[in-house]
Amino acid sequence: MKALKEGAVADAEQIEGSSLKANAALKQQVDDIDNLFSEEISAFSTLWNTPFCHGNTEDKHDANDNANDNANGNVNLSVDYGDAQASNRLKFSSLSSRFPHAPENAVSMWIADMDTAPSKHIAHAISAFVSSHYGYQSVDICEVVAARYAKQGADIAANSVVSTASVMAAVDTALKVNTTKGDKVMVLSPTYGPLRERITAQELKVVDVSVDDISIKETDLDRNITALLDAGSTAFVLCHPNNPTGTVLSEPLQHEIARFCETHNITLILDEVHSEFGFVDTETTANNSAANTRSNTKNTAHHGNNTCAIKPFAIDSQFAQDTIIRINSAGKAFNLSAIPAASYAIIANDELRDKFAREIDSCHLEASPVAKVALIAAYEKADDWLACVLKAIAFNRQYAQALINVLSPTTPYTLGEAGYFLWLNLNQRFVNDTFIEVCKRGVIGVDGASFNAPGYLRLNLACHPSTIKTALLRLFS
Image (cartoon, rainbow, N blue to C red; front, side, top):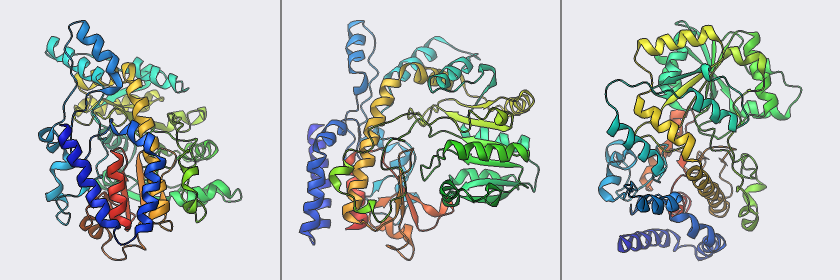
C-alpha cells in the first residue's frame, strides 16, 4: 500500500510538473504555497483518499477507541478502501459514461460526498443493530434531533420532528401538501438542481430570487425586500446555507424574509443539509474582489480555522415558525450517502405537521430503522470525527484560495460562509462549451448550468489537497 501511495504522489507531481514547465516563476509560487502550508498538508493528508490511490482509511479520528476495542475483544470495523472498493463509489465508477469528454486520469470533484471513511462508531451501531434485530422495528429519532439542535442553541420540540427517507422526499412532500398545480414557488438562485426539478415536476412555476440581489440588499438599506420577493408565490424553497455558493444570509435578512413569508402566507421550505459545515469567522467568506484576489498568500494561510454549525434559518423569529418546514439529515455532515442516514423535517405547526406526516406515511417515505440508527450514532458519538473533518476542510478552503490567487487572480469565485464547495465563474476563461472544456482538461465538477448558472463550475473540496492542486493547475496553467 505504501508503494501505491508513493506512486500516486509521483503521478500527481508529474501532472503538476508538465503543466508548469512553461512558467518557472509560476511553479515557484505554487511551490512556495506548498512550503508555506507544508505542516497542514502533512497533518490533514492522512485523512483523505485520493483519486490516484485509495489506500488504508482506518478511522484515524478514533484511534484510541480502536485500541480500546481490541483490548475489550470487540471487532474493529475500520475499513480498507482498496482500489476495488473505491471503484464502486459513484464518484469514480460512472466517469466514462457521465463525462465522455474527460480523460482517464481526470480528477473527480463533482458529487457531494467526502473522500474519507465515516466514523467507525456508526458502523458499530449499524452492525450491532442488524445482527440483533429483525422484522419491522420502531426506532425514534425525535429526542436525539431535538438534543442536536439544542447543542447548536436552537430550541425545537421533539414532537415537531418527522423522519423521512431522504431530503428530496421531504421537499417533494412539502411541496405536495402546500401547493396546487400552477402555483408559483420561489427559489434562491443559483440553487441545487434537484430542488428546481421537484418544483417543475409538480407543474409549479419557478420564481428565481438572485442570491446576488439578496447580497446587495444586505448593504442597501433603502432597498425594499418586496422588490426581491414575489408576494404571489405559495412557497419559497430555500437552500440555506446555499448550494453551490455557500452563502449564509444575515440574521436580520433571515428575519425580514420570514416576516414577508408570514405576511403573505408563503410556506418556507428550508433545505439545511449543509448547516454543519460553517466557516463564519474566516476571511474566505465573501465573493473575492479585485483586492482580495491579490491578497498576500501568507495572510491567507491564517484564515478559515474557526468552524461551527450554522444557526437554523430564522430560528429566533418566533412569529414565523408556523410557516416553516425545515429539512435536514445526518447524511451530508457524516458522509453517510451509502446508507443513507435518516433525514427529517421539523414542523412546529400541528396541522401542517400532521398533514405532512400522513403523506409521508401513505407513500412509505419514512426513514428506515437502520437509517435512524445511523443518525443516532452520528449525532451522539461522532462529533470528534466531524470536528477533525471540519478542520481539514477549513484548511482545504484556505489552500484553494491561495492557489487561485496565484494561478488566476482575476477569476471570480465564491467559497461562502459554509459548505465544502468552490464556485468558479469560468465564463471569461472558457467562452464556449465551458463544461466540455473543463472535462477535457481532466477536471470533473458539476456544470453550473444545472444550477441555472451556465459557465460556472462547482468543485467539491472535501478531498485530498493534491486533488485540489491538480484540478486548479489543469484549469489555470
